[in-house]
Image (tube, rainbow, N blue to C red; front, side):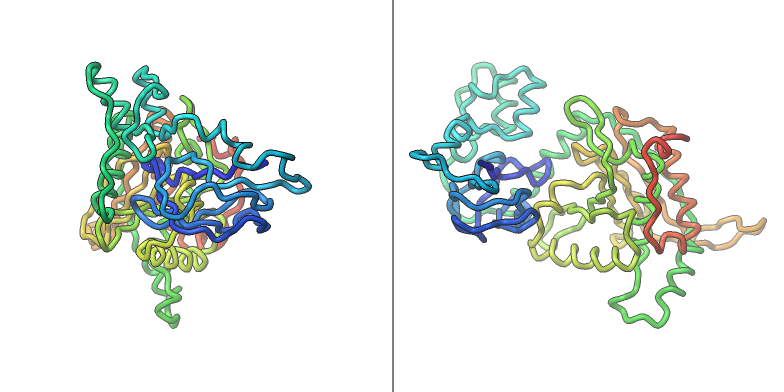
Length: 391
């Protein structure tokens, strides 16, 4: 029997509210199928399932707020039938009776030497939150946290700010950041884009941001230690580049859902996917796979008028790449000074996974790729990790 649990839709998610089921008992489901909608502090997310099977029982009803890891439903695998005399609910009872502890709270409890299983949680249904763990560690005589009274409508903007603050506080507390920057001439890239876009409808034209995204993904092939996760005390390299794109929301706050396999797609495909992703993010319609598996984050604040952005790494990722606005600067070209459009690219990286030499190599590769924009307009050839690691 398969237990379908509420996934963590980002490092800053402790719980969610089930809004809707798209399945019922007896339905056959396929891997990648959207089966439910869950409301997080940031958006209503379409949750996909990653198993083939037949729905046995739905264990959570719409409207319930539940911690990450809660069993939402049970499924029967091919050829499996329910156990005689036992309901699917009984089959998973041992799993659901264990005290619920959010992933961030469990990690922090290990760091502080707190037994999270002994804490009384202040989250919904008594779940133990990050705040509960830190209160127990710092105030030995504190009274057990109480379950807050139910309130009316959720203040999404306030909840989002709390979620972002929790993730960024954890990042600065746990990750030894280092920062590098590189000013990159963009005359060739912009000239190529102008020629590439000539005669095309507005909705088919490429933006500089897409060229930068593709260049980041290709550059990461040579520096794979910047693409992946730091978990359980060690770095885990990712097999592909799933770029989390920082998107500001109209009501305030931001999300960073993933564009998948960025290095393997054409610029036209990436432009189409980026446009769709931004539209769905601002409409509050994202998929769980887009929220849970970015391997690196890219933020572009050029449209906000800033020249340079030094970001905070989104754990458990190990790097964040930032781009400022395009500005004209004096630049030496073939021995003469010319007004040249440039952009400042920055890297925030985790010293546990890489060092400044590797970060500098990444930025140098990024600069060179943007001098040859035509070569980015096609799927990049595969590169083995061992080849990519050599300087």
